[in-house]
View 1 (cartoon, rainbow, N blue to C red):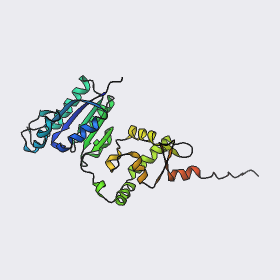
View 2 (view 1 turned 90 degrees about the vertical axis):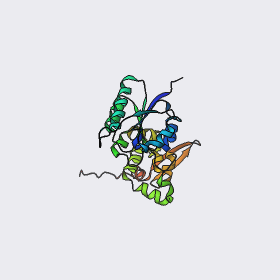
View 3 (view 1 turned 135 degrees about the horizontal axis):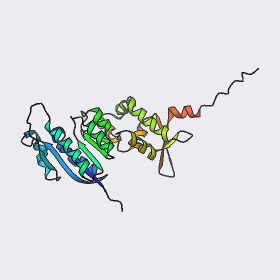
View 4 (view 1 turned 180 degrees about the horizontal axis):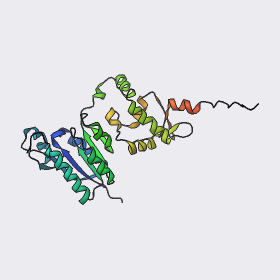
Length: 249
């Protein structure tokens, strides 16, 4: 039996919500076993009281970092050093970074180059570069979209050009000659190219996201196999070819 993936979690306690740690660990349980759990901050700071209350409950090791210089984030530096140490000395498969304010993009890039799967967690204020660099990134703040009327939610998604292009490109990459693509390979293709997760848009499953957008058509075969087609591209594929004119005379 294949060994479970080994996961190391590094938490920037200054910039992450303590009340969401159960969500973080529950998500990571889908990937493997969390062997290393560390949270960084100045634990003399009353702002971290919420984190202190959950450290023992979730077996998280607190790493003390004093604010030696005003305006300089020593916590981030300590976190980066420990991640690099783990990359060099520990046998881990997944690196998890929990932060909202700091741009850990160079660190993520280094971990990816070492063959690690990198999962990020943070609030929506997290730097875009950090979010996009991760293998997968999940937002921890409450889902605003779910509270919105469904039509407004869908309009917002359809106006997200980057998202729609990502979905269309994934379909095109694995479609058959008629423009139909199986949902499974679509999801795999997306995960290989972006930190996308449909839950960040308020949908539990990728199929729910596709069904909510009228730009796409879905069908089911053999009772359970889901297929998706980009309506716009399907028109192009089904368009009859114009006969070429004979210019010889």
